[in-house]
Structure formats: C-alpha cells, structure tokens
Image (cartoon, rainbow, N blue to C red; front, side, top):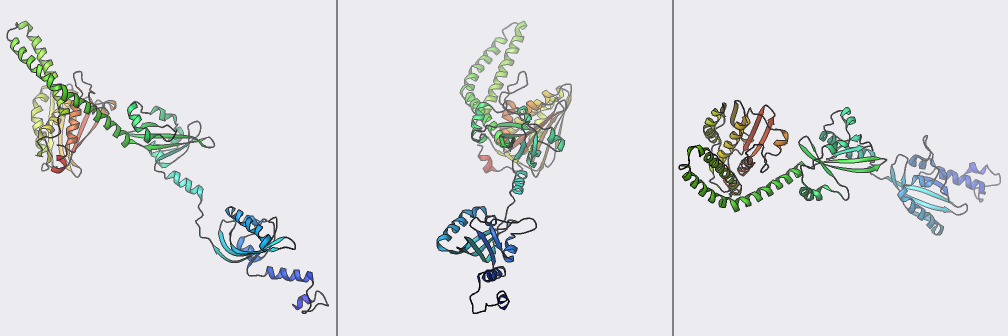
Length: 488
C-alpha cells in the first residue's frame, strides 16, 4: 500500500483513497486474480480481460481476437445468456453455471459470477471453477463421406448430363466399374437400355410395387450380369446433383418368377385333372376301332393308319405329361442309388444313341451314397435329359453321364456335344409350354425340374452355342425320411 501513497503526499493508509488511486488498485487486483475476469459493456463488447481468462478462453491469439462476449458462448446458449443479462438489472449479481466455447471448438462448463457495475453500465464476469465438457466433436463431412463410401447399397452422384461425379464401392462393384475410364464412360441412360420390363409382367409389378416405390418416387428394375437391381434416382439433392441408389433385388425378382411359375403349374394341374381322363377314354376307343379297321383296309391306305396311330400316341404322351403335373407328390419313396439309376438309364437309351451315331459314356465315382426318393421318377428325369441331348446332336457326337459325391451333396452331370442353348432360351427352360422343338409340348423339362425339387435337389444349366450343354443335378448326400415325407 505504501507504493500507492506516493501518488499523493497527503494520503495515508487511514485516509479514504482518492478515486484515481482506487481505480488503479481495483485494476491491479482484477488483472492479478487467479480466477478469470472479463469486463464487457451493455452492447457485449469486451473492454478488459486478465491473463487467466485469456489463457483459458483464447480471447487474444495470433490467429484471432475475440471482441464480443457472445463469440465465446455457444450459439445454442445465447438466448439463456441474454436472459441472465436482463435479470441483472433487478438482481445485480447472478451466480451459476455457464458454458464457454474456445476457437478450437472445445467446450467448458464454468461456475461464474455475473456482476452489474451500475455506474458505467458494464458487466463483470468472474470465472471460478472450470471443467471441460467431454464431447466427441464429430466431423460431419468425414462422417457423411464414410457413410457414403461404406453404404450397403450402391450410391451414385451424377450431374444433369448423367455422368458420374462420385460413386461408392458397392456401386462400382454392381456396375463393374473397375477403372477411372469405366467410371468416366458410364451414363445413367444405360439403365434404360438394361431395364427388364419384359421379364416382369404388369401383374408382378403390382405385387412388387409396395417394395419398389418410395413415396412418389418411381423406380425401375435393371439386369446387370446375372443379378437384378432396383434403381431409384432422386433429382436435385444439391446444386444440380442427382442421387441414384442401386439395391440388389435378385431374390425378390426370382421369388416373383417362381410364384408366376407356380400359378401357371397350378392352372395346368387343375386343367389336367379335369380333362385328361375324359380325353383318354375316347382315345382308347378310337385306338381300338382303328386297329380293327386296319386289317380290313386295302394296303395302299395303310400309311394313313400309321399317321393316325402316331398322332394318337402323341396326344397320349401330352396327356401323360399333363397328369404328371397334376399328380400328387406322394410316391414310393425308398433309399435308392443314383449311380445305379444312371447306369440303368444309359442301358435304356444306348440303342437310341447308337441309332443316331452318338457315343454314350457313363462314369460313376463315390458309389456308396443313397438318396431317399422315387427311383422310377428320377429315372424319368434322366431319360428326358438324355433324349433332349440326343435331339440336340446332329451328325454324331458324345453324351457323357457322370456321377460323384462331395461335401455339397450328390452330383449328376449330363453333358452333350450338341448345338447348345442360347442365353434367351436358358432363362425360360423351366417355363411351362415353352419349347423350341417343332413337336414339343414344353412340359418335359418342367416335369423334370419339379421331380428334382421334390427330392430336395436342384438343376443348374450351362451352355455354349455350338459346343454343347451341361445339365447339373445336385441332390442331398443321404435322404431324410422325415424331410421327404413332406413331399408326400
């Protein structure tokens, strides 16, 4: 205190300090307090702060100078802070928790005093206890980028010209965009070219609609390689940029195709059950009378009877295939040997193969496995496949019948060196009434697929035009009677 006495000779420690001395004294106290101190006016402009407040809140740094008190208070706290300032008019002093934000976005919760200095309408802020608020300050840009890049569906950002601005890994994989050049060449117009409206009929589209439409945004389904994708484009999400979403709906489309086939087979079955026997009855009478007439007709008309009997036999074959579709699934199930069935089929078809100069080879491995099923119906499948293979070969060739078993199950391969099957026909092999044969019914393969499925198996077909086809039948390793009984 003695140093301040020098400011005025007549002043002593017992005397009342002069105003200028008092201001200097107060200033020195504030500037050297261990607590943070900030003085600001009623406009919010910062008039004074001590080193503690500056170190804590970074008010004055080489990069930035904070001039207004609200710049160190988070935006969402402004209304509450201004409310406290208004309350000061009445209460003069407020003590409570305040939240401050530094230029590096760190946040601190502080116990503070707000004191109204009425003489010059200034507010004194004293910051006492501080504690940093532990929050993860998220970088939204990096989060959005990571979400885009790692999305489960394919995402494309495109300009108005349909060119890709940015795409994620899933989109690149789905579209086979394996290089920057491929990405640059791609245009959204390609989706229109690959639209599969012809594959999914109008009725199926109605069934799929709840799963394919988002509000008023309509979608399309495209086929890329062997998979189907729902394509949704949202226009103008930002600055003339469109967002396109690719969602793999292969299983959904295949399910609809299966449902369509099931509905067709159901109708065919009902039709067969209703009329097959009625047709067979008059056919039996016709065949009998024709055979009686044949012996009494002159020899030069005998070829007519041959044509009549041939066509009646064809009608009977069609009726048999119809009845196979309508027939209940119950059969004489037992443990059967697929290698034995394969060899029996080869023995039955050997003569026909020789007639057409075709070599029929059989190769069986892992003969110890069995399948719980109907041997006669399985033999019918193999006979049908071999007959088709014979018809696909012209001028001699080879048909190979192979059997082997592994961890996946029991495999039968029917390979031929015939003319092959086009990609268009491959997709329709299991459709009722679809055939490329002049006298075919389009039911033989449908029945074969159906029998294999009833035995818990499946058929996969691969083919190359001019080189031949492979029918791959996969069955369970050992049949389960409880499982098979569900087919009865």
